Length: 69
Image (cartoon, rainbow, N blue to C red):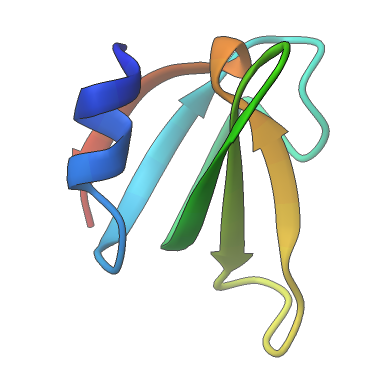
């Protein structure tokens, strides 16, 4: 996944395919809330369906694929 592809999914409900070492993986469904360009890459804020009212962050390199949910 490129950073641009991830940024295009902001605000959408999606299913994330995550790297094995990512917390909450290997897949997670919810909404991408936003992104932040950081020195070490893109940081993604994600609101998971399985934890209403909470948000988690993932570095973009943990996101293997994004699918519509």
